Image 1 (cartoon, helix red, strand yellow):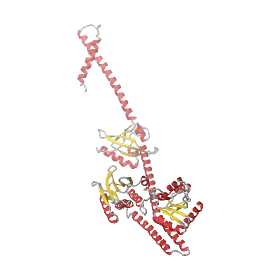
Image 2 (cartoon, one colour; image 1 turned 90 degrees about the horizontal axis):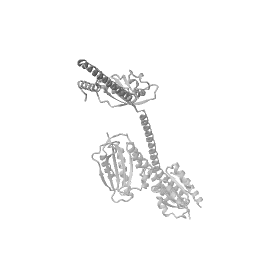
Image 3 (cartoon, chains in turn purple, cyan; image 1 turned 135 degrees about the horizontal axis):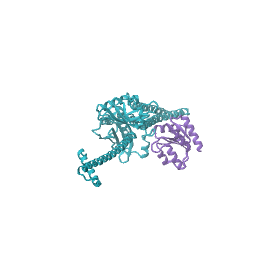
Image 4 (cartoon, one colour; image 1 turned 90 degrees about the vertical axis):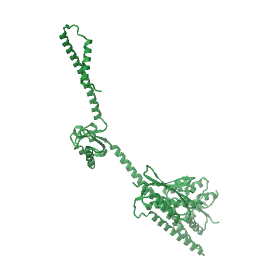
Length: 122
Length: 422
């Protein structure tokens, strides 16, 4: 069974594009348009990694990261942000994020990070 | 009431007689005429003594009063000057001398205008002229100019005295107040610059967000297509789909830039008197023809609202943006009959107009409301959002404010203000 990547982003086109790229690269992709719907289905023994948008309405990326930590869910997180403020980058990386990438990101770079994340999680 | 001199003399005589009667001179021989003369002399003597005593008392009183008024004049905490028609100092108190920076004797006979800062001389001469020509002269603020003294600011008031040959002038030191005012002004300028920088940063972040979303999608589709082309039996249909999607995202980015430029275009920043109510009616008509959604509009417009001082295009863009926002929120939450209510009224101290645009959607949670103007933030799944931050920039550029308030039961309400035309 191929490794699973969760894509959480409120932009339809971004979700669709990332899903296609990751599927072509051989991953099993599950996409969510917001953090809460992901939380509802994510079990504690979830495996894989998360590609997470920073700026989302309601619960944003860093808030979801905190929520997961509190639930003891240790999925590696790759943050994607349109404009990373230094404080957000520091805060998320200190909280254990795998990487913080700026949109738009080169597909190869993202795939390498995903590979690294999954290897680390294995 | 004053006693007439006669009555006073009569009374003096009566008092003197009374005193004499208390001490009759028994040892003097009682020869009638001599006795009478003596009596007269004694009465006169006592009268004189009494007058003398009265004078002494009056003098002491006058001296005390003079001292009191001298003290009041000299040590008053404001400068007092007596100036003649040419502005020459005829009299001044100690505080006045201190304001001018030296001893009193150095200023007597000199023209007050010499000590007035060059920029204020005309205003000072004008004040003197007004005072002596009997016109109402309001007090003026001016800078004192004295070579070896730090700059001083004073406020002067003057009134002519009865002779109309001199005037009395007070001078109050307002240097400290002026310095504070200057500091406040500087702080305010710093704040405004900071605020502008913050808004510029937020607007830039908004633009970055608006462009980076389609760019990321485009990069992902392209990379996916490239990967598929490297596969042994590439799925041409899927590659086709990826390239088509890339094209759509490139166009989406272009559209965003066009919308942004359209929104920010200020052909010329022309400020005029704008009738808000008529702009609101125009915007509602435009929105109902330009939007595929049916909606009901409720206007509570103040007919007495004076025109505002603003750029007509900006007002139109902000109104359209707020109406579209309301309608899109209604669409998002599937409100059966969207209602957009717009109200106008005068606010502040009657010098600004306030517009409120309200929808009948579910409103926003406090958390959403807090983040509404944060960097670039939208609750919509596609585009928009940028409109709000730019609307706020436009309103602020026109001297107003734009803010949001949400009460769960009444939907979301956006307010903005604009200065009234004077």
